[in-house]
Length: 245
Image 1: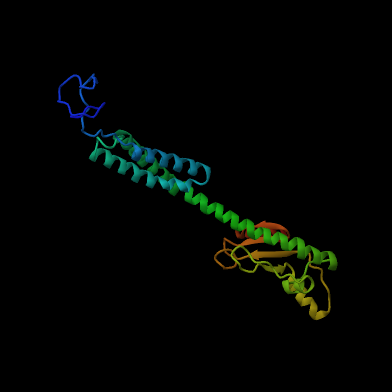
Image 2 (image 1 turned 90 degrees about the vertical axis):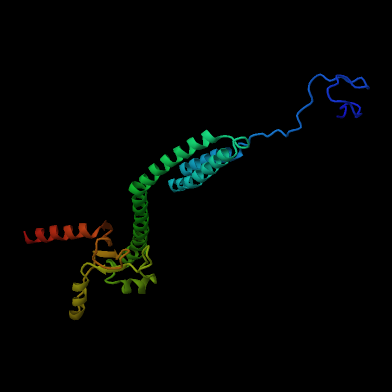
């Protein structure tokens, strides 16, 4: 073996070299030292933290990123089990895999039961709100302006467009919102006799996503008040019963 001080060849087992260097212990084993790696399990921990933070900050649907956490934990377990000297964190990976699986099943159940229906309901509310905003805009900028000039609402959308040059707006589904005067039939009949009539009531109606009129998803405004198809039907029944009295 070589002296670590002068580099001269010396016999193994001697306690002192000719250069005066003395050995204070046994020479180091030439076998390489293997250090355990915790990179795989640390990546899993970081990925879990990222999924939790983004899901709580932005949207719960990002919690489905737990699939990546499960894969990462399974990989860390596989590495630690196959090479325990080279990779550590087997117990931590097992615990994280179990926790993530249990939490994932719970989140999936909650999403299916409550999350998706709530998302669809909120989307429906946004669509209705966009359509109602278009109706309110048309009422304020066209119908009320027409009434201010002529003293009554227009008998039809074509009559309003001739004055304002603004057609009836489209709803959220890009379908034209219909406009009718509540006494349009009487007004049209009066034209034959030369009589005039003041239109004081109107209706704006969107057919909704099914594109069919007089169905439950219709969005209706009568005289500035919004109704569902069922509410309007009940209102008409009440008015009819009152008129009979």
